[in-house]
Length: 281
Ligand code: HEM
Ligand code: HEM
Image 1 (cartoon, protein in one colour):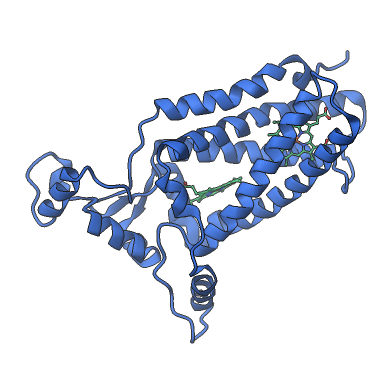
Image 2 (cartoon, protein in one colour):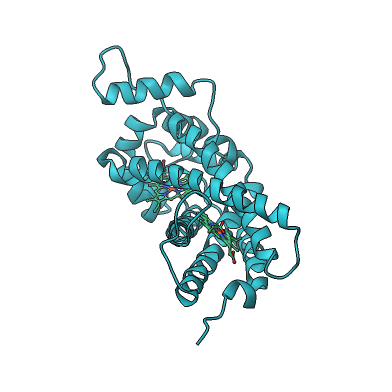
């Protein structure tokens, strides 16, 4: 029996997923980073959900895309049914990818200041050289005062954005071509864009997973991508500028604040922070 192509049958779902992502962002309540006792809230629920839906989507889109083959790599699948199965896998995870991306986009539109945290600053090169130089034991390098995201992560973010936008826009045109007759030359260009951006995404993905999940130094932030929290001591060492900023803004809750009683040591700071509406940090 000929396998059905989900891209043909449920084209509308591809266009509904982004709206669902934006709707979820509209309905979500964000929580700003805060020092809570000996932990720091680094990734709130919406950040974790958008990250993991996007990440799972990307991982399986890469797998299915590589199996299907690109303009510059061979296909690892033969026969109509097997090819249709892998296109269907591509379809399902494109929905995860679209939901996650638009959930993140909606969250970022609502709290625009978060976008700035991801963009590299003028210190990008010097901080990155000092960061990794000091980890490798180079004497002349000193560990820099990194903010919430390392300068190296911020540079990689540009690659993630470019690859995501290009693969997404070209992917939407490829889906549209299942419902409408689009010019052949244009679709040829879209396939090149899709395949080149898939290769860029693979590059980002491998580097990101290596620095964000494989290297032992990243395991505490990897855990926070599930639990939300990093230990305060770890954050003070790895992201000292971020912790200083949180303290200056009064985004600090002591153990007594958390039980709802009058605070002790940091209470005036915490109370001040709440009075000011805990400015975003
Ligand atoms: C990390 C993200 C993605 C990667 C790595 C990826 C990779 C690929 C690859 C390698 C192919 C086969 C070669 C080609 O036709 O260009 C392909 C096909 C395709 N992709 Fe993607 N893709 C991704 C995201 C998406 C998204 C988000 C969509 C939908 C919005 C999408 C829709 C399609 C479609 C419709 C096809 C062709 C189906 C057909 O020819 O019938 N892709 N993709
Ligand atoms: C299985 C694959 C992945 C793993 C294991 C992973 C792991 C992580 C970890 C541990 C963090 C926390 C880093 C920190 O707080 O400094 C993170 C953050 C991030 N990752 Fe991934 N990631 C994956 C896939 C992806 C993909 C595919 C993208 C985008 C194309 C991506 C984009 C980001 C971004 C933008 C952040 C910052 C999130 C935020 O806090 O707003 N990740 N990832």
